Image 1: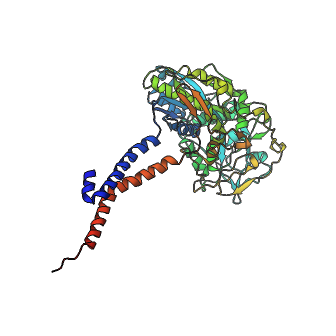
Image 2: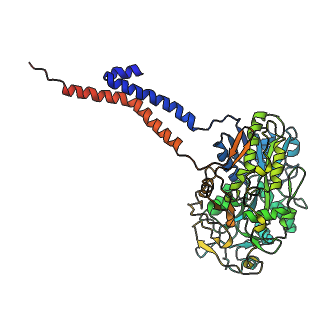
Image 3: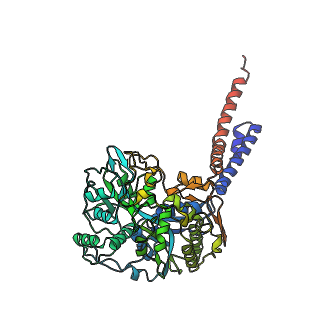
Length: 545
């Protein structure tokens, strides 16, 4: 190539351009190699819960900058468990454990997941806490209501179709501040097997048992008492797939009157309000990080780390959000295929990040950070994973409940206006603005598009998380301050896993420079040679006769 260049143009110019071409080739090869992470560790695949997907996607993006390749697909808790026992993924995410066989609403006997998963030893591992919220779209005279309140009984009546219109007197009793419209209620449920469905149905099975049992019977699920289920019993309900699906449906501008159950972060992403739910102490509360953490003090852990939430639903603290729970990773404890020790090293590093530095982002993403006792439980499970790295002393874990400022005991009590029977201030926003005002304790979400989105997605940092990562203090839902994540690292065997700082624009600039130089190297010599030949022909003496 260099020889061709030097023959195409004068010798001196050819030498210069040849050097440029060589430099361009070197830069174009070396710069991409230097700019992208070196994935020295084995890549791992996971699938499952959309309830926790916002957090897992964020954490996967975080650790990619440290060279860990985590591929997670949000396909629903049920599918995630299926993929695990069918040996298609390295880990799963679910809000409920593997289930035994039972007959569903159509009379079909479900799969015995416990038996099918027995060939692949596993453990449950808490990854984040959160509140199952009730995102709604209710506009009155062109303004979006942002202060809706619901008792557990009225909440269950809405989703079991006992209450079908927003002007029902029972809802008016919850909301004396509102003149509720004559508008049909459109409850939206999950069409796929869902941990969120299981969480909500478990709450109803515990707190509104008679309503839930009667609804199951009307839907064809003849079990009494009716258990929590992953598939919604009423096959004629308005259904959407995955958490994004139900949230998008409710946020759509043409779906006034809709309400769904979804993890709080999905409502935050779209800037839509969620209902305040009446707790056992008689106060209507929002699923803020503090309210979730306070309620989960009533959780009882089983020996396998699965949760008993009956104490959470009835926790007596006035600040508690009653529909709170944990999500789980299901991780292998043997090298049964497709897992191996190399993948175990990657998975254990990822879990250490999730349990420690990753929890700094929990509040900003719509969750609540894990408490110290669950972090210790995670460390114990890590030691069962083949090829694991050794966890550090727990006091070196950068979880805000351990080394940060997340202290639930200092959370203020709710205002008197949140007590049952009191009249709260009316809060509303222009219809279609996608803005949830702070009057009900919900953070502003920004402006939505045609479907009510705020524009923040799980594939990249939200503006709040970017602020957190650059070292600035950021307020989570309810005003909870979260410790900065920048430069927070967790030293483990094999190197530190740290929360990422803001993205460095230099690698992208180098790519651009390399591309320009490469184009010059390819097209520059012929173009310059042509120009020189043209000039030489123009300056050559005209022959005389």
